[in-house]
Amino acid sequence: MNDAKILLVDDEEELRRSTAQALELSGFSVETFSNGDHVLELIGYSFPGVVVSDIRMPGMDGMTLMQKIRELDPEVPVILVTGHGDVQLAVKAMREGAYDFIEKPFTPEMLAGVIRRAMERRGLVLENRLLKAVAGKRDDLEARLPGRTQVMVDLRYRIRAIGASDADTLVVGETGAGKEVVARALHDISARASRPFIAINCAALPANLIESELFGHEVGAFPGAVRPRYGKFEHGRGGTILLDEIGSMPFDLQAKFLRVLQERVISRLGSNETVALDVRFIATSKVDLEAEVAAGRFRADLFYRLNVATLHVPSLSQRRPDVPLLFLQLVREAAARYGRDEVAAPPEVISDIAQRDWPGNVRELRNAADRLVLGLDDGGPQSEEATGLAERVAEFERGVIASALVAHGGSLKPVYETLGISRKTLYEKMQKYGLDKRMLTTEG
Image (cartoon, rainbow, N blue to C red; front, side, top):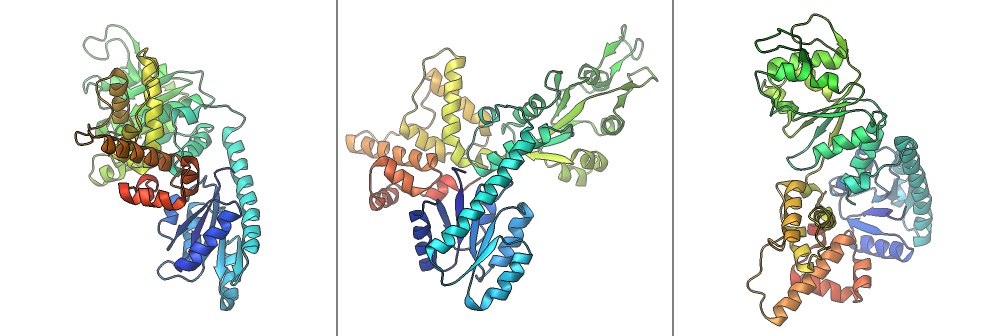
């Protein structure tokens, strides 16, 4: 696990800092925390590391943290650090799922040895999960859904696991986050990949023709029905049906669709005969369907039927560290699409892109990449003040440091080594330019 990381939790600053330094000298990548709250944001199904936590801390103690981690993934190794009088408590923790405990005072070598064994175990767990999920298939999910943040790594794992099954799936996310990309990926890595993928925008279907569009009709089913017609559900037989923005489906039609989900049969309008369907349904929603159920706008039974396999597509605000790399990929794609030479995004643009809000998510970011390639603007707001040489040099330096922080996930050591400066100099320049590694790396 080249991206393996130790999350070190201890409320004592001096002990936390000295332990982290010793582990870094042993070759580990370490991120430190004074409490467990932010640790839980980094834990997921594919988290590639180990948690080391003091057992006694104010607020959330080590035992509680371990229990919450086990709720997220019971196979994340948690190593508890105990005082002399806490051995019985540590033994209890082992029974409840802790990987190991180590008693104070301990040597760095002793802790490093326990961590290496835990890392090996976590690596085997993730490898087995990946083999089961992929099931021998090759895919391009990293290219379709790029990102190094934990939420994106987890999303790709879940797509591989769910995609290999035939389960109907609900894909939830904000506008522009990439829900249809996820739906298409689920189809393409499934056994149905060679069969049709039919996308239906529930919000765009004409109200007077929606049943005919979905179910088809026979001659004479309604005025103007002069010939029989297959509906979209029948066109998708053997493949996948995407119901985009299912929250917009009329309430009376939801009951009929629920029957299709449950029984896998349809009846064309004007016919009493049933037609068997062999399809997989994927639904997307930008609204909270549970809230829609509470408001009486969406059927509860349909929601619970859809909510078996659910994928949450993160917004860009939840995966901010991915934004610069994603933007550069979108720039390359735009250059190829418009037949332009490869465009180099200036470091100050990348710095600005990393820190801006993107309410339109990937769709809005793609538009910014297109504008940069077409020469309409530089992808970000112009700086009118940085006209002198000193100001331009400072702006360039700030952009380089910000980009390096993002590229290395906020880990300072590879940043100052790559830039060829000392750790002290890096700290001073980060302070000078108002750069906060957590601002650039912890969201998502």
